[in-house]
Image (cartoon, rainbow, N blue to C red; front, side, top):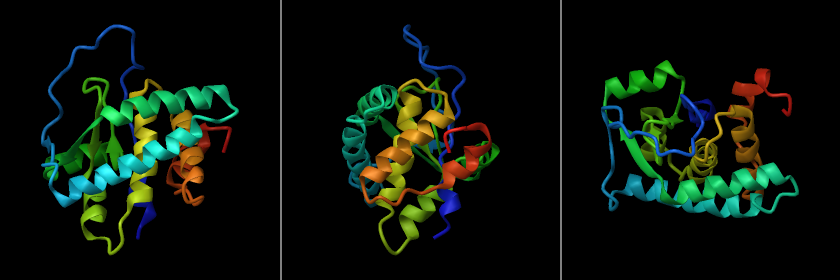
Length: 181
């Protein structure tokens, strides 16, 4: 499996504000899967795993990490997944080098790019842990942080509470801007 394809990216124009943002239509062509779809069920399994990891990360001695974990868990539990439908969606993902992303104009939504969908649909073993780690990262952005370093630290802490073998894709992607790595 090419782990580099699971690097989660985020695009936030501004951190979450105290006022209700104006909600725009989600970028096209992304759509919501039927809940009975096996692909949708894999995202739900990853969500459940990510929420379990976030519960453990929420007990961190680092108060800011614990607070971010709590906010991320609240956001992730209610988030909607919209998946890429075609080449236009692929171009959107490629332009920001992302496998997942969130937008402040679509609160509560995690966009799933085609490369991620390919792995979910074609890998011989479930990719639940990798999906869960990426969902933690994106949930941190949904919780209001535009800081890639904070989102990456949370995803690493959360993944370590799981199987102990986090994907290091975002560490490599953001290392130059993050002192903590």
